[in-house]
Length: 150
Image (cartoon, rainbow, N blue to C red):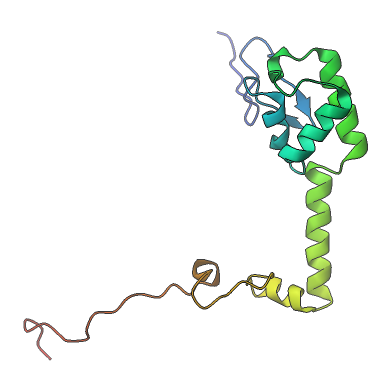
């Protein structure tokens, strides 16, 4: 009886083989059937504009599919992104440490983060109620039905 191992969290690992047509950059497996211009923003810290700039510098066609890239192109992409950008774990850590610093010095933005309120000046009377746990229930007229006894 063959043992079947299931790898959780890695969609590209089959029972027998590893799909080599996928590109793995900064720990993220890019979708194989998307254009590389649209696949790079799957990496936290890289948006559409940044991906266009990266592809222009590396002279890779934005219309190329991820699965059609050569291994050399994927290696160049990986090296360029890792050397020139703060992405994924490092960026998330930096953002969290910035928020923690704001909370510790008790500045206005830090206090808003502590209270889980909007920090950038949005109104709070009518919006962001679910975040504040302040969902209001619409009441009826207050008149009791005749079936209810007092």
